[in-house]
Amino acid sequence: MLIQNVDVLVVPEAGECTVETAQDIHLDDTRITAVVPTGNRPGAGEVIDGRGLLAVPGLINSHTHSPMVLMRGAAEDLSIDDWFNRRIWPMEVNLTPERVRAGARLACAEMLLGGVTTFVDHYFHADQIAQAAIESGIRADLAPTYFSSLGAEGIDAAIATTRELATLHPRITAGLGPHATYTVSDDDLRRTADVARADGLRIHLHAAESDDQTQASLDKHQATPIEILDRTGVLDAGALIAHGCGIRAADLPILERHAGRTTVATCPKVYLKLAMGEVTPIKQLQAAKIRVGIGTDGAAVHNTLDVWEAIRLVALTQKHREDDAEWMTLSDTIRLATRGSAAAANQPDTLGALEPGRQADIALLDLSGPHNQPLHDPRAALVYSVRPSDVTTVLVAGQVVVRDRQLTTLDLAETLAEARAIAHTLTDLSRGGAVQHYNP
Image 1 (tube, helix red, strand yellow):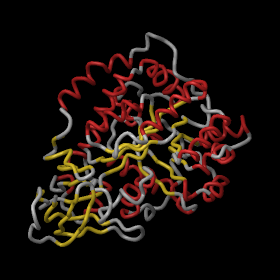
Image 2: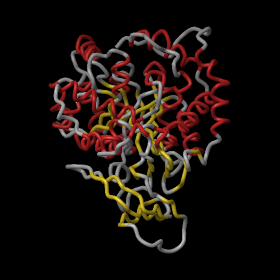
Image 3: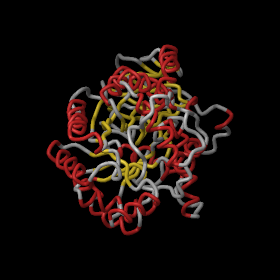
Image 4: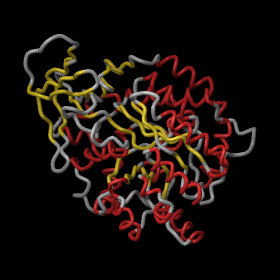
């Protein structure tokens, strides 16, 4: 396949991102083989006309709970305590494999249409999420969620699911998914770390989500969540930490010791909406050599799986946090969203850049819309202006999954109808009970 005469976003490991105009992207099966100035079409194969379009690495949603799209708009204007205890965890009593798969199909559709080619998921019934990902053509890294309250049998089942998913399909990778340091005991975290080391798996969990959580951990356990991850071996095994807004200065040297195996996913819209007080301390994490990616969290709080919106909010909230308009530049924000998010997806060398040898996960954007014009700097458009509707074509592993703004793998009308038909079964709280109680 050839994407011909397209502008290409170049994201170096350091320094300024640039746009190279009039390029040809050559693909062979699942990978990029060359990015060269445009010329005559060489040999046979499909040619995608890239004139007037910008090619960017497929976006990566570094932390989400994809089936929660079925709860979109069902838990609004609540404190974080009430959000969990009065809405989300009571609704999750209603989860079934079929409902999870329907939600995951809708989530995959939304993400692909917005240029997201990989999502890093942490949820229940992960086998069903995998099937939705395989069907839709998207790439997924899946961590089956578990609490200590599930008991040994429940945790065993989640670990077994991870092992099955790890060899299921070339586009599916898997990790271990303990929920958080406040819902999983130290003993179960130690066991998780042991399994991770033995099986070569990564651990994906929530930790230090807010400063209140960190203080609660200190009060109850005389240790921050990061210190708990350190003493239980989770950091040594390798971890993706969701949020980390409550990471304190004393945690940074601990994280730096494990920088080669640790990443953090930031989801700023969630922190604003739940009035969590802080956002992820990206500047300090980067000083400690910790790689950071960008995610949306679940749509039950983020409302969308729009990674473009998350990118925009990362730039804005980081400037505000550091009181520095020159911090979190266009290039640095784009690098977080591409190379940083590839590291959060545990694929730093195969995703996140349009370079020979990397996976052919590509989104083509039409920046001719009035909200992007005049186009003085396409990088500024990518960070501050682009909408999912600007995405025209998406490839995952060299396969066209969105063409002319239409899904090629899923019937969108059918997917929407299925989601609408069952959404009420999740939001019905008449059964009572909850999967867990939020009291960090």
